[in-house]
Length: 429
Ligand SMILES: NC(=O)c1ccc[n+]([C@@H]2O[C@H](COP(=O)([O-])OP(=O)(O)OC[C@H]3O[C@@H](n4cnc5c(N)ncnc54)[C@H](O)[C@@H]3O)[C@@H](O)[C@H]2O)c1
Image 1 (cartoon, helix red, strand yellow):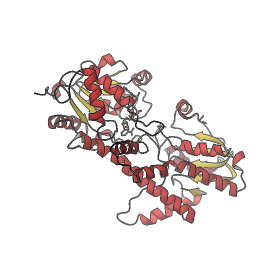
Image 2: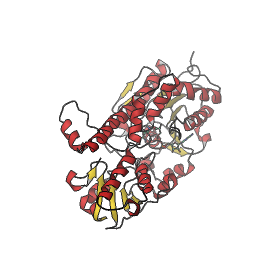
Image 3: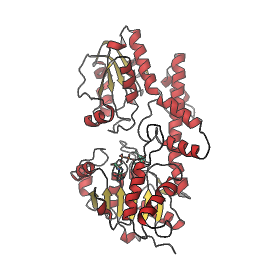
Image 4: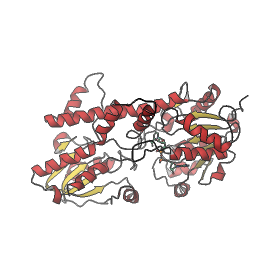
């Protein structure tokens, strides 16, 4: 007889990992049940207690009004919780292999706090099988409890889109799953309380894990195709944006844009899937070739900027270049796996003196992660080339004249993301 699941009038929820995913989730659950938000980063916890969310996902007043949310970096404060939701990072290592370190550490933390009847739900993006084959054994070892007899598990992938004011946690349909039909029904009902868009109950944890990882793999590949088209059309002397605009008039043409694929999701998650595929003896070709194309786009952009400068008689070795934007996407301070560093490094490898400006990014984080010293206010009339790399609202509001004014008379303006009118820039991806 399995240990009974908790009843909804007696839930104490713990969210493990208070980042982009965990913090909004903890705030949402705290509207319904007493919730403990736990993070190993004591500085992050202190900042949140003071009302400051560095990810800019939750405003200070929302944090202040979450009276049923206890924030802590002390593992002991998890005692008494009966639902644990794990939202820690799932990065890759330098060899692009999944690094399950944070996930297994969080599993151990949960295992030490878990009691009979408890439920452990993972939200971190993983490969199919990670929850049951990698995380559950750690929980069982630390707790001395057994899955589906003494405790229950679930997996519900996150689909939030940081920086997007329209798509918030509550209004994105959520996939749910559980280790038994009863656990699945519990997990599904739990999320239905906070997700107004509803849920999709997947038939197993592995299906839910696979669904999440292919959502991002599909996006990565779609962008890789358009990036490859951009490489071809550049050689043919055709503007990719013009081609895409024409093709998009067909009803079933998918409107993807070329670009740098950064962040900790789209450029990372496919490696979780390819790793698992290789473990079972299948060597993915399409997925990995898409990754190779996307990873090469930073060097391609830099090469085109250098060529444009050279054609105007500007020697790249003595050029001053301004890169506008370092975050991996617009209106977001997230620097993880930003591929704009490839543009900066490649330009520097030609000897160019490169300044980077990003009003969203924390300067100390840029220095610590990439050794890039951000400049606050790029001086007017100073640059031989300007690379508009990220579509932050500030850059769009400034407009093309203000951006051009930062350059010297003969300067090159390269628009990576097709943000400005075609005729206002010297080239675009
Ligand atoms: N950010 C997104 O847009 C997004 C969207 C969907 C899915 N995801 C996935 O969700 C997961 C979390 O991503 P994120 O963006 O919130 O990461 P994040 O880096 O913003 O936050 C993770 C937090 O977990 C904490 N942490 C690390 N190890 C811990 C441990 N052992 N115990 C407790 N806390 C720990 C970190 O200090 C950090 O504050 C990842 O698997 C990611 O792929 C992210």
